[in-house]
Image (cartoon, rainbow, N blue to C red; front, side, top):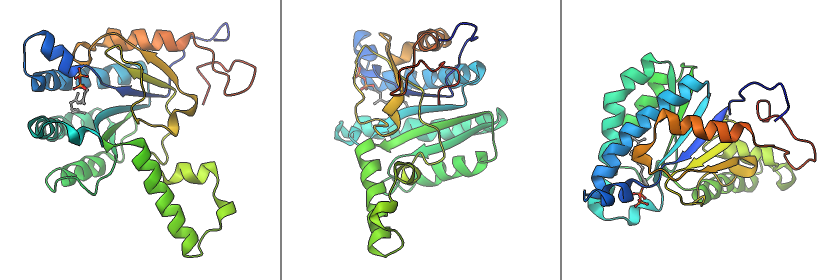
Length: 247
Ligand code: FPP
């Protein structure tokens, strides 16, 4: 951090919300209880991000690999997202929060997709915070779908291979138009990316926190921002770029 910089806030924070199951197990509760408590932590995280002046918050809610969990848990996670949108959409809209959803929509149940589309449509004019929900999301799947689109454009003659640039790939991803995450937080002490935002994470700072996701509070968020604020970002160069202006 360059001296004189005041409290640099990352423009885009992405969170791998991990530890719901362990939180529940330690209390002798069913895993689903951990996810239910996790939704309360989601609300705290959205509020904390908005209050801190973060512009984009991405939450990893359901990965393309999560389908391998027991059917009951999958159905529970789907139900929690449904309820979250139904209960919180009005409040989020009132708070000027824009909702975007990333991930493969084609295999989502017919009752979830319209809800997600409604949330995106209702809030598309909002400008305070963009909440990006990664649902049925896997980075390799996202990149593969982008490659298929580009290959189709080449096959149809609309594009030549040498016109494919990093910017064009970026524009074909689910996150098109969203700046790369500056900070990726993972809770629960695990230190992995787990197929999350692989392309977009090229220059992200990583902060791994010991807390289980249901225990996540505004203070946990503030702690991650403090750690981020003193990191030096060089973007492949040799001079530190102040975290406040690094893009
Ligand atoms: C990881 O904990 C968490 C998940 C797979 C799901 C996260 C989902 C929510 C917090 C609720 C729904 C989200 C929204 C946006 C409404 P884990 O079960 O892998 O925990 P473990 O590693 O301790 O078993």
